[in-house]
Image 1 (tube, rainbow, N blue to C red):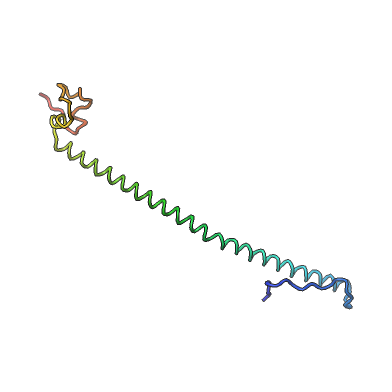
Image 2 (image 1 turned 90 degrees about the horizontal axis):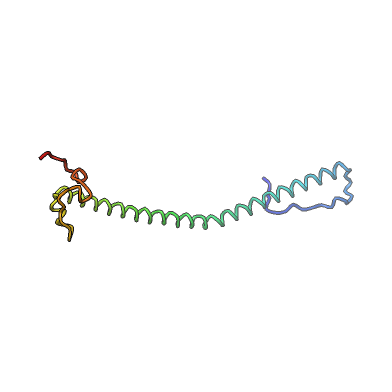
Length: 132
């Protein structure tokens, strides 16, 4: 297995080692290939280090986002439940209180002679019209 943690040693291409031109070219190509492998390995190691350094920052941002979403959900959920409770109270009031009682609950307002005069009719309140 190759060890890419250390830069390969360079030889002097001009020294006379008894090799011919072909031998020197092979040595040069081999050394350049080893140097390229080292550079690629080193680049990959640095890139991995940078990514690992940024993971904590990214995880922190994701934590903050999740907390914000949970808080918004809890707030929205609370608001929806409150609205539902108020609508239920209104439904009970409409169910249990006739129009005269509703008019009495509005301070300073008298029940007009015509139901249509109050801006709504009995169908709006869930009642039905009966012939008189």
